[in-house]
Amino acid sequence: MARQHNRPEQDSEIVEKLVNVGRVAKVVKGGRRFSFTALVVVGDGKGRIGYATGKAREVPDAVRKATEKAKKSMIRIPLREGRTLHHDIAARAGAAHVIMRPAPVGTGIIAGGAMRAVFEALGLSDVVSKSLGSNNRCNLVRATLNGLQAIQSPRDVAMKRSKKVGEIISRREAGSKVTEVKGLEDNE
Image (cartoon, rainbow, N blue to C red):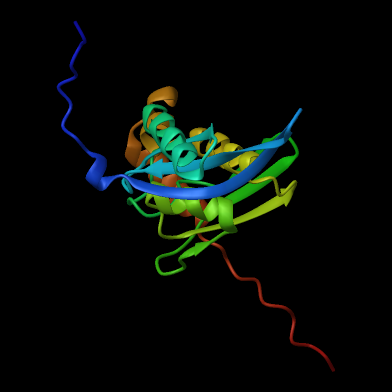
């Protein structure tokens, strides 16, 4: 007897982003057999994200397989005010290096294709990022998620340091204020 899960269907709110479709050829006696790989990122737009690859003889089947796997592998990422990151992050996967920074309201998503898909599915609206090194889309998605998993919310930091959240946030605000140093105007 199959076990039924009593989970409400949340597929209507899931955002699916197709990042890459690749064609793979296998050489056999009669010629070449083509199959397709699909890299898909899924998220709920509220801080949950997952990614996966699928492979099949047809593109729609590969996308469907990848989407099903990605939904099973979703993880939660803490977001600041539901729109940006808590702090700067640098991460890597293979030869792909990524740098992600929080941004003020109205900045938007400043990112390349693979990273943009991750941020849109996650629900970030203000973030600045840069990819360095390899531009392999699979490794860029993997590096982005490695970095996002390393985010520590003020609540996590406060628990680890046995402090109150207010103490952590007040220090963060004081540290983030950039004082502008004006140059000397004595050009005479």
